[in-house]
Image (cartoon, rainbow, N blue to C red):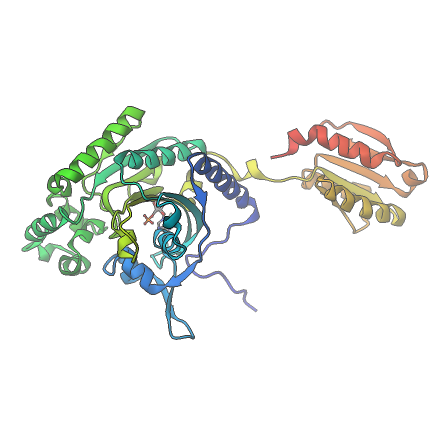
Length: 427
Ligand code: AMP
C-alpha cells in the first residue's frame, strides 16, 4: 500500500532540524523580552471576516491565498495567513488597551497561504511577529527596527540589508492613487491580467506584481514618497534620523509597498545575502488605522513578521550543532544485569542524566557499537560477572579511558561525573 504524504507546500520539521528552531525561538523570546515585549498566543483559526477587513479584500492574500472553509455551523473560517489581525483582535476582545493602551506583544507560530510552492515559499510557514500598539512616535518605528536587526544579528546573520519607505496616510494616498491611475491608463496593454484588474480595484497593489513586463512599466510610475503630506514627511524624517543616530544603515526603496493594505507611514523589509529582494527575511510597518478598522479605538500600531523558514535557511549553524547525544549508555549483559540496568537507567534519567540502554541482549561488541552510533559520552559496562564482583566499568568514550566503579556508589559517582561533564555535553 502506498504511504500517505504531507499536503503540498506543508513541510515537516524533523528532529535533527528542531534544534535550530528551538534556538531561534528561545533567542527571540529572550531578546524581545529585553525590549519589553510579552508573548501572546493566539488561535490558528479565525473568522474569515477578520482577515478581509484587516488585510484588505483586494490583496493577493485575501483574494487568492487564504485557506477558507464553511464550518459546520455555517460560518466561514480561515487558517490565519498572518498574525497582526489576530493579535489586534485579541487586544480588542480582551480590552487590553483599557488598563494601558501601550502593548508590546510578540507571538511565534505557523501561518497559511496557498501560494505556489517554490524555494523559500511554503503553504504553511512560520513567523515570529512583534506588534507594538499605542505609540505613534517615529522613534518607536526606529526602535522596533533596531530590535529586529539586533535579533537577526544575534542569531548569527550577517550581510543584512534594511530597506525602508513611507506609505503615507489616508490624507496623502488618494492624490497618489489618482496620479498612479493616470500614469497606468493607456498602458493597460502592457500589463498582466491581474494588474489590469488591480487598476480598478486597488491600484497600489500593482507594486506587488512579480510579472517582469509589469515591473518595467511600474519602474517608471510616480513615487508615493513624492506625494506624502508634511505630517508623514516629518515622521519619516525622524525615523531616518533616529536610525542614523543609532548607526543603523538602510536604503530607501520607494517601490516597496508590502502586500497588505493596512500599512501607513513607515514600511520596512530586511533581506539577507543570497536570498535576494523577492525573498525578504522580515518585513513590517506602521498601521495606524488598523485598530480602528477592526472596530477598536483610534490606537496606532507598528509591527513586523520574520519568516522562520527563510531565516533558518540562512543560519550559519549546522543541524549537527544541535544534535542531542546521550550522556550515558548502559551496556548490560545477562539477565540480572539487564534488570539492574533497567532500574538504573530510568533513575538516572529522573536525575537529569540522559541515559540509554539496549534490551536486545546482544553481545558487548554490538552494544558498544550502538553506544558509538548514538555518540554517547560515557558507557557503563555491566555484565553478570561484574555484578557478582560488585563492580561495573565506566568508559569515557571520548578519551577512551575506563574506570572501575563499585556497585554501591555507582549512582552517585555517575551523577557527580555527569555534573562535572554536563558543561561539556549540555547544549
Ligand atoms: P508578510 O507577512 O507577507 O509581510 O511576510 C513576512 C515574512 O514572512 C516574509 O518576509 C517571509 O520571510 C515570510 N513569508 C511570507 N510568505 C511566506 C511563504 N509563503 N513561505 C515562507 N515564508 C513566507
